Image (cartoon, helix red, strand yellow):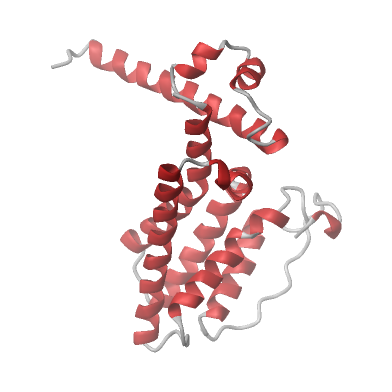
Length: 226
């Protein structure tokens, strides 16, 4: 059993290890996004980090493991958001779907580069890692279908094929990584609101037409994306 003095030390050590892993992942993601996975070496990652390659090997066994960690982050974040709503948010199916929509959009756009890397580089994942990530995606879809089925049974949703609706919702939100710009016409909150309105519409939930979102003065022209 750890003593009262060693326990805080172990906690600090674990935090340091976690910070080093996160720094490595962040830099690897920058380079994979800029150059592509195949054109990025561990030496290049180490050079940008100002460390030696053994520093990376202390936390990751290979470049492939780094890719798998990066590719899993987007869907893992989306699945965590969905799970949290299903576990903690009370209310009607429509209210919970709206909350899922808001959190799903935020999860995707906060992990924009990770999702872009997955889209470009999934061909370079090992079969085991691709299967693991695909299982997370299927779990997300299955749970969203169950929520849509619940809403149909309650008479709140008007959907003929809940499986297709879930895939359409997931596709619409996941694709937002392509056009979203941090300095674009709308804020993340506004985009989340607009896409959630579309999600509820896809589920056949009657809702008033929202007012047109105003463009913040600090944002650039619409040509930079929504």
